Every structure is written in structure tokens, then in C-alpha cells.
Length: 234
Image (cartoon, rainbow, N blue to C red):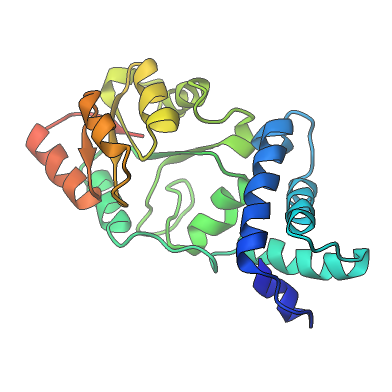
């Protein structure tokens, strides 16, 4: 975010201050207007503009309206593209293997509509309903579109419907959060496992609670093959 100010001819803001300001502004907005303002029909761009403006203000940068608009337009365009994102190298091979095994793949994410329409396709993660070769997923459930977000179990119930009203015991959910992924998925009857890519200190407690915890999707593939689970992938 700080580099966008520099791109319009302004001194580059302090990254740490802006980053901390963003975390606070985002949390505040998500609490006041969850699911990117879905319930009050707030335009996506207005939701993000409020977050970005408050991020800079909290960091001590109160730009005039014209200057802020220039900075914001660049930020909004950048984060609506694939530019700031990378995918883990094991993601596409794993998704390809799952779909080639005849299983259905669904994405459940606290994200806005641009992830479905722009960002994921730009990263090469295409929806099967769109006519691309090498499709990575069959359906998506995104909080900004549905109006419900993790850890609300209802978002997982929507995923079951999108998968074709499959029984939850036929579904495996893979996530990286005990609170947002594992517990709500289990609460609706799904199988679930957690990835610990970054060696989080909480992982030991996850294991002690009985959750399967794996380091990456390569290990997940090996685990699935060894378990010989017949399930839908969500």
C-alpha cells in the first residue's frame, strides 16, 4: 500500500505504521460491515475505500481528497489483480490430482467477488464451469457474495448444497485455521484436516485436540492416498 503513494509522486509512507493501521482499519470495518458490506448492499469499492482511508489516517497520513483518490485507485486496481498474490507450488498439482481422481473441488473463502471473477483465474486457478482447460475447482463459496463468512457453519452448509447436496460425511475440508476452518466444518459433519505451512505454535494444540495436521498439500495427497478416503473435496 505504501508503494502506491510513491507512485503518485509522494514520499513513501512508513510500511510498519501503514500495515498496523490497515490491520486495525480492516478489523473495524469487518466487524461493522461484515462480508464486505453485503447486508447493507455497500458497493465493494466503497468498503475498501473506507478501509484504506482509515489505514492511512491511523498511520498518521491524512491526504487531501484528490491525492487520496489517486492513491486509492492504484491500490484498488492492484489488489483486484493477480499482482500481489502468489500460489503455493503444491496447489495446482494437488487440485489437478483431486479432480483427475473424480472428486469435486470447492473453495470456501472469506473473500469478495473479485477473487472468483478476476484474481483466481489470473493465477491460473480456473472454475470448471468456465470453459478452460486445466480447471482447478468446480464451485466457490465466497463470503462477499453469499453474505455469510467463516467461522459461521452456514457457509459450509452452502458448500454442501453447491456440491450437489452431498452428505457431509462424504466431504473433506482442508484449511489452516482451527477456529475458522476445522471446527465449523466438523460441526456440520464434514471430515477435516489442517495445514501448518508456517509452523504455527498453535499446531501442537491442534494435534492434541485430535485434528490431523499436515505441513503441505504434498503430505495431504499422501495422507489421502493412504487413507483411501472416498470423499468430495471442499
